[in-house]
Length: 187
Image 1: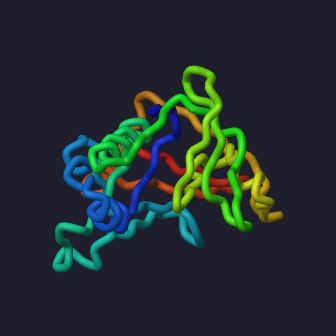
Image 2: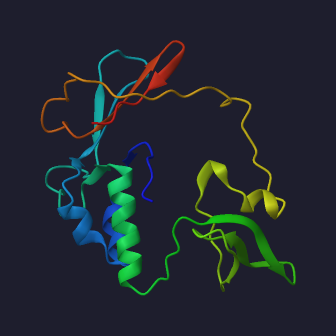
Image 3: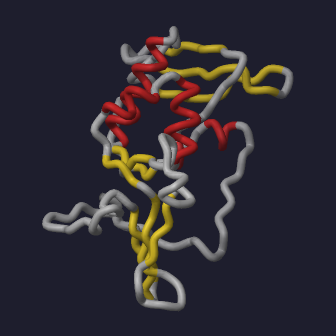
């Protein structure tokens, strides 16, 4: 950790709400991430791209009317370091094998540590933040439900020589629809 993940296009409520509550907002602001004012779309009835801003207008623009495009490994490391600094006991290079349940409630996990030793960790709250590879969801009977409309394929890649949108939208995510799908280039 941090491991590679595709980048993330944050929203103002994450940057100015959740990150502030976690005490990591200053580190996020100082990390050098691409700043975005909103989003740009080539979508809908017309072919001309259109944009929205997080601020209702320039007159209402303020300290919370932007967000960031983040590199996940760097962002995740900021969050992990922040948690450690707040006293969280972090265990890295461990593999969870199963959920520990008592009285019908998950109260911990069994895992193998970096030295190959099997251990148990207990907690008042257990959060599974593993994403698509979730073992805990399956272990407690959770079922992943897919929409029949979104059982498609997503590809990602990196491009050289791409151009950003002109200012003031150069940091925006751009969502583009075409007959057989859509794309979302993130600067």
